[in-house]
Image 1: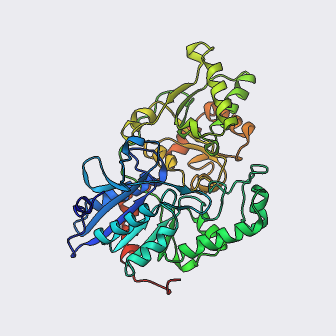
Image 2 (image 1 turned 90 degrees about the vertical axis):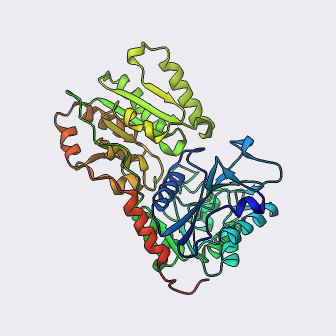
Length: 439
């Protein structure tokens, strides 16, 4: 992107608080909770006359047509305050780019926009070393970083799930990480930790949407005084729907069709219930990105769907393949009574839980991590043991047959967190005075 084009970005009004939001992907290109939350903040700040906001979202080779020869940062879709960072030569071990042109372009972008606050919603696809670069270019700017998983701690995609037995990991160490990656020495993990913590040392405030994640990062070594709990919030684009008459036997899955989201646990539960002779329920799958699942899980899901195609239409689960815009969610939620969140990892927050509450749908979720923290078992939803197919099958059977259960849980559903409240919390962090000296 040329200097002239970047200069058209917001940032000229020195009376306003200038905020740069750095997002992993753009929600219009790739759906995901991290980018959706960043965009919710962007849209809310756009309505604040005291704030000048700019969005810089990354893009990978999923959209090759967006990459222009010689460009590192480009405008996005005719928006004068939204830009794309074109990911190039990315090192997924150290989380850095070796493309010096990209680093130079990011530095030039910072000098041109001149933000008072730089709020990172990830370092993936950008590089964690850009935190240090931001501090060097903007020594007086306030840097805020939001964790959406454990990628700084965990080399296994940031999921804190052991590759040895798929159990949840509660503590990272050089030896334990070496057990998951035997091809890498314990010393390499020690160096990785030092690398991550050195760059994160330039951050003024860290936020996490779940309290249990704060404890993880404090144990890992981040200063407790810099850790803040900010719940993910979103705009209200739907209201609780009038419940249908009769038994509540319609179950829905919404999300990515990848291993850690646990769709295979749900499909196995469906098979088990059918084998037990129980067919008094329906399931609707709203999913995408099956291509990112492991070969084993992708094969299992594809085999299940192929087998479904051989059943009478009225007996099949309903599979809505592909991404969907959030504006279509009211119609999709209207087709189900329960929302199932069968995640097999910590599932940091579970944005779909908030979406289900927005439409008056009780949630059946795993009993660990975000769902375990947010769903009140037997009060506003039901929990089952993480990864336990039989436990999920029993819970589905109970939900479909127990009279009055759905009504009781629905009556206790909390209001979903709002994006206004979330953004106000961030504004307080943006305007706060720095605490302890920076590393």
